[in-house]
Amino acid sequence: MTYRDPEDILRQALHSAAESVEPSADGLAQIRARLTTPRPLAIAWLMGAWEDLANLVMLRLGPALAALAGRLALGLAFLGRPLRPAIERLHPLFVRMQPALERLRPAADRLGGWAERLGRPAAQPGTQAGRSSRYGWLRPAIAIGAVVLVAVAGGFALSGLPHQISQVAASLLPNQTNTAGGGGHGSKVTGSGQALGPGSSGNRHKAGASPTPSCPPAGRHRSAHKPKSAPATQATPSPSPSPSPSPSPSSSPSPTPSPSPTSSDGSTGDSTPVTGGTATTAFVVIAAKAQASPSPTPDCTATPTPTATTEG
Amino acid sequence: MTAGEPGGASTRPIHVTETLVADTALGSVPADWDADRAVTALYSTHYRSLVRLAALLVRDVATAEEVVQDSFVAMHDGWRRLRDSDKALSYLRQSVVNRSRSVLRHRVVVDRNAPKPSPDMPSAEHGAIVLLERSAVVSALRTLPPRQREALVLRYYGDMSEAQIAAIMGISRGAVKSHTARAMSALRSVLERET
Image (tube, rainbow over all chains, first blue to last red; front, side, top):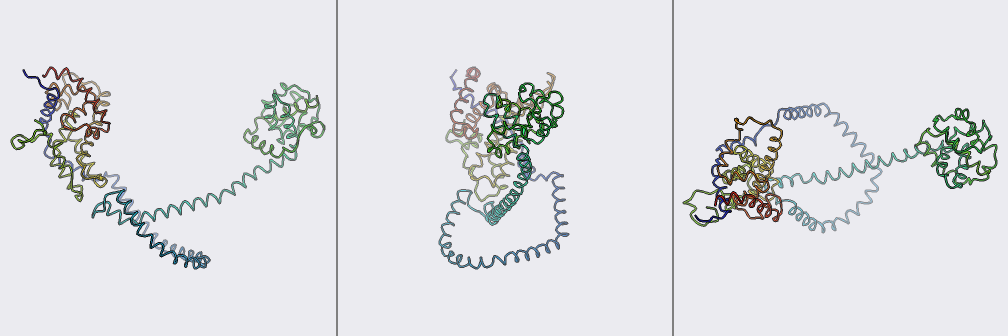
């Protein structure tokens, strides 16, 4: 018995197995049948409907489109009238540039040829390359259209921007004036609160909302009774989300006095730097808007603490 | 007898390997031919060998024919995009291998979810598979992972070089080597029995 190479055995086995396979004779017919399979009914119907619709629209809108085109031409002519002097001024420049452009044309053609050769096989009759050269003008037209579209969209976006800015400013401005008028004390308090040091950050946050106009009236009602109230007791009323300070003083009179110091105490005013008010108020207004109403009471409660300490 | 052997072409039957490898010149189609003409030419020269290649991979003649016909249709559709018409045969081979792989993958999923047939009821593919797997070696091929089987079939049936196999399978030459070596070691016991 002779030794046979395993590779030969495998090769022979594969070939004998493959030879037993005999494909059907109508393979080419089947391939052609697949190639000429008509479109699915739905797609064919959609395409037909689209064609009909397009015909109908063009039939109906043809005169209207023609009139519109005439008006558009008139409008363009009207718009072009003021531009005519500029164009006439630029015309000699273009005329002067023409020889230079003509000189550059061979190089551009050569570049285009290279790009064409790199990108695809040479154009042949009936092939895609030949067809693409026929529709070659479409590419720059599409590019110009895209540029115009982007420019118009950008113009619209930029024209809308100042309006939006003014709207935001208008929405912010009334709050700022409010805070400037009534909440100046709030800002003062925040300043003093910052100076307090440890634990002041929480207070600062509370005080940040304090200048809202809701608190001062309450404080004014109660005037400055007891500024030495403990912060814990001040924190308790905070859960009441209502901006009106009325419920909180009823439960504990201590927190209320704080907003009032404006009129009653000179002490708070002495201790605080007022200059940072406008900058901080803007921030405060934004923060207050973001937090909405959940912490109006803490504002009132936060304020007493600094005043108490400054006094002490 | 393989294509590598010189002479005697007229005396022996036309071998599959010849159409796969030796006639690579026939895979090149004149560039100015349109898709229909190219499909017809490639069909007449390579259809049978491609079906056989696919049959070895998917172990089913009807599916193999379908795979090859799909490949021809795909080549026809992409004829304009086919930059180098000389590589039409390479394109077809690669397409056949990829589609065969897809068929096998799909078959695995179907087999996993299909209800188990009663033992006395042969499957529809049974006849074709039995026809293919009369040899113990070929039936042992069935146990190999798909990549290893592809590598072996292309190497020993298609008589392709490692570079060609790597190009068709879309892997590196080193991976081809390792797939082939592992497949051969897996088949070693069967092959030694045959020797």
